[in-house]
Length: 254
Image 1: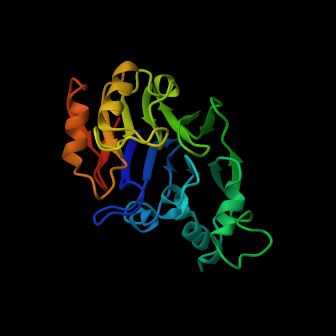
Image 2: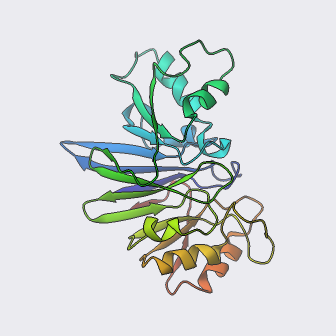
Image 3: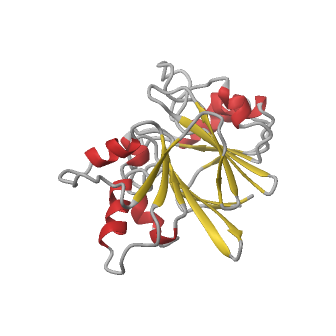
């Protein structure tokens, strides 16, 4: 299973990275299956440096804040208007309740069909596994102001846990249990950010991964106004090994 970080900037695109988007790929039945976890602003452009969007097998949206889903509007354009014609079949798009309506509302003047001729919208359910080619993806409801999920992606005994946007919560223990890699929301800084129920600090990310028995920690969703090294130091106070920072177009093999 290969993870390519397409965008890792928190809350909005930064000067060096699009907002949230992670490409997961693995070979299966003679071809490569490809899914993206989130598709935030700027991600569709960077994604095309790695893969033709027509080759995607699914899009999975943790939640409907624009920094995680807004480039789905551009993906819709590629599927409706590409002069090569429509790819065969509708692209599955998994998301919280209301995903189809929210994306249609973001595209002014769209017809009565919305995006339903291009996308096959499917509702995420807490704890209900989804099978996409060689992947099993289990969504877990996490702690954010809106309906939001983390994703546990499994392939041939390897586990990638993506927290999505969340504060510390009990769901992270099962989401990250024995994960080979935890991709964790580290938007907040210890001692500065006191709001609850939104994001984690690096220290909280490390504690959640440690409590779950995870083997590797990768901090992401760090806003441009944060010093990533401060987030890393917050995590290093708890995490016993190397604390890694997500970088745009970084490739990690599990």
